[in-house]
Length: 386
Image (cartoon, rainbow, N blue to C red; front, side, top):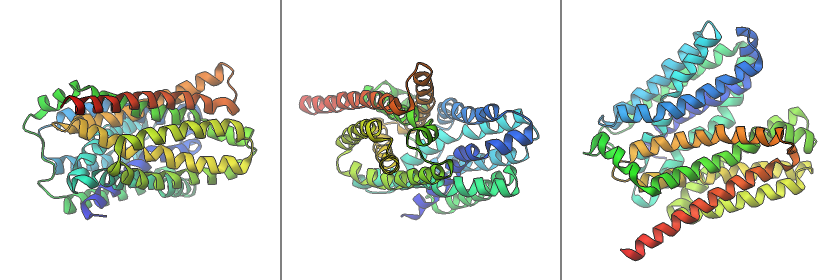
């Protein structure tokens, strides 16, 4: 892994841990701050909304600034935000600290993906983006379980202090390893970044990202009751199955980068179709514990195969001003996260059983396939006209 991309991966590990570790610490946070567990769960929602609304604001505010200082600043924001989380004396200040921290999330991954792609030859750009996102996937395997164990042993504040330490390492790594002249902003500045948002292909790529993410969270949000009630697994076993899902994500991330460098849109379409098929199998055979465990692993791998190519798709479609579009794509993923969880919950409230919930995910991912096919057909039409 090129050292500058390693620096970005360390930061993405820190950011991923920041986002997800709170899920394993909800009982401790709720008890310490005197709120209910559902109220503590809103700390997850608050972070997601901070990503959605903060991404375009930060991207537009930094459109004319050199990329390296912006990345250093965003990594520093995460250090400060996690420090505020660690010392927050009450629930609302912790919520404010979470939202403040999240403002840098989308911009970091958006700008970072543009920088990572610029550091390698054109035929390896998607792989470079995948390497940067490897930190995010590894945070689910290492950062979240270790952070949860640390919080259970020494208190939840200790977890956020540990993330501060990792964040300081990422700040130093970016400042030391990332070239100063990397991926300088285009001469068009903010207007140039806004102009590319008029391109249909940019919006289609973000719509695919939202629908793919929604298909994941419509089912994955409720994966624990699915695995316990439908597959018959114990609560303790579910924890290990979720780690297996994270391992699949890490493998899929690497595969996705390599496949996207070879055939970008065919990779997206074929993988989304495979996910739809997997959901169908999940519905039919999810009651068999061993099959359910295998499906969760493959599911994690498939869903992250599409992440690098979709990010690369946005960067390519917005080539004249990619930073804002790539940042907005992170917001699109998070809109899908929130929307998918809501759709899944709505389906359950309307009487859909956990056993049939994967069919909801299948419907959403097939919508993503339709958009992807439309996007590819527009590509071919453009080539023919040219």
